[in-house]
Length: 350
Image (cartoon, rainbow, N blue to C red; front, top):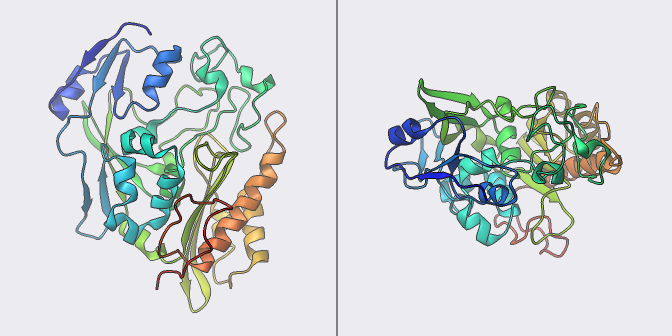
């Protein structure tokens, strides 16, 4: 590992003042430390933000929304009563990610910023435009087939690995950040970038800015009774998604009054298609309707390498997630979401 300066500020202002080019922010370290060990990331300075006060709280806003501090641990948030009442599919996504040990260390802010698990990005000997701009993309002709099927470009076929971000995108979450120019809020829908010609520009966050909180709008609670996150993976106990979907419905009189659908592991950002949501409005939920919505959500999908199979998998995952949401949010989440060996569905929320 390359030698680096280590700084542990006591306040947010001290943390922002400690930034200089070549700095990396350290939260739980579950992604950054691994990449530093392999040389995929080699910061000159690491600023440990884990001791900053006030960033480890979940608070109910005056309008009924939630403000989630950037240092809240994934495991704590997944069991937070206010989150479970308002956005249960966010908790389901958190419990689908990583292992219990990693969830105990990983933070909300770090989850939003985690880097792709494309093996060519993680290998410093491989050409990767996301890691070293202008070097090329070895993944395009490589052996990795869990690449993007939407929004990719000749410069990059990487996917965003986050489970957490998928339901956040469906529920119109926003990211609160602070930098030397003050505070601003970034809608999660625009927080992550598609690669285009500049895949190294992963997010809308500027290098000298720090995530301080995540905001969930009060309207997220309107979907609480019919919301599910479904993750398909090679190994249920601990693996990144091959495809995932967050589906949420607001039902009125047996018909869909409002629908949300976001897909994960299909692009460099959570993928949400307004047309897929709008075609369900006013309709009675059934398999045929959800198949059409899933087809619309995958409109324009194209394989990157030999992963044409992933298009059909993502389509089926989206339709299945919508069906689960229509059946109702379980009163108690299974220990291993999406496990084929898990218990039968329990009665839905009232």
